[in-house]
Length: 79
Image 1 (cartoon, rainbow, N blue to C red):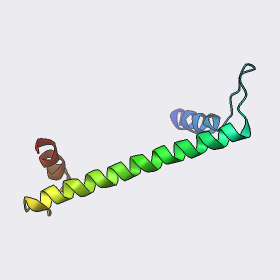
Image 2 (image 1 turned 30 degrees about the vertical axis):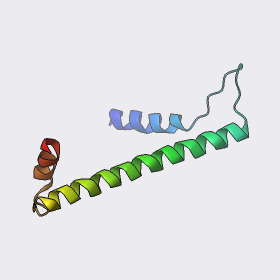
Image 3 (image 1 turned 45 degrees about the vertical axis):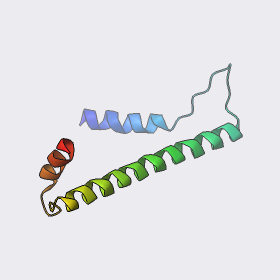
């Protein structure tokens, strides 16, 4: 129970904005940082989709498209 409370507290603290007296983010900087992070997340998702599509194409060329996920991962590691 305590671990779950700590996790929720940690998630809540992530939303807080930390600013230094030497550096204050302007609204434009915040907007740019948000756009950049969203773009990076979208790129990572697209890379995962591309990887899975390439993996499935390789497995299909080997006539192994109908096997379980563990077996698929092991074949992908070997090839």
